[in-house]
Length: 305
Image (cartoon, rainbow, N blue to C red):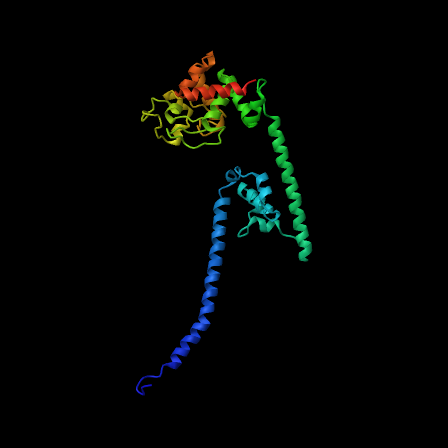
C-alpha cells in the first residue's frame, strides 16, 4: 500500500455498520407504510361505497350474501346497511358500525366468541326468515294468466306476468304478445345492452320513438341524444307525440324502467293495430324484419295455451 494514500478502512466499516442498522428499519418503515396505505385505502373504499346510502343496498341480495360469505361478515353487512340507511344508533364517530355490533361485556375470549357467534346465528336465522317471507309475499302477489301455457310457465319469469297483464288490460292488447316482444328484444331483460342501432331498455326503444320524432334532432335511425330529464318527462313526450309511458306512476317515463317499458310497448302495439286484432301489422311496425315478426308471433303462440 502507498504510504501517502489516506487510510479509508474505518469509513468503509462505518458505512457498512450504518447500512446494517438502517436497512431493517427502512424495510419495516416501508412495510408499515404499505399496511397503513392499504388500510386507509380499504377504509376509503368502504366509506365511498357505504356512504352512497340505502339506494346502493337496494341492489344487494341478502340471500346471496349469506350463501357466499362467512358468519363473521354478516354483522358487518347488516350494520353497514343500517348505517347507510340512516340508523343513528350505529353512527358512532370514528367507529365502524360492525365494531359496535360485535361488542360484548364478556372478558373471557372464549365466552365472548360464543356470545358473538350466537348473535350471528340468530341474525342469520332472522334474515333467512325475512327473505323467505318476502319471497312468499312476492309469489302470492303474482297474477297468473288463465291461458298461460306449460311452456310459458317454464320460461317466463313469474315476476313479469302481472305487469304484462296490467299493460295488456290498459291498452287492450294480448299479454302474450307483450311477453313475446320482451323475450325477443332482451330475453326477459337479461341483455340490456344498447343495440347496434341505438335502441335501449328492456323492450329496446329508440329515443326518438320514445319521446317523439318531432323532437329536434330526431332523424335517421332515431337514436338522437337528449338530456335524461327530456327523455323521461311525460309532458315532453306528450308534446312531441312519443310512445313512452309512466307505467309505475312515479312521474317519469323511463325507457330503462321495466314497467314503463312494458306499458310503452303495449301502447306502441295498440297504436299500430294490435288493439283491433292487427297483430302482425303491429309487430312489423315495431321492427320491420320478417324474421323478427316470425319470432315474436311464434313466442306469443307458445306462451298461450
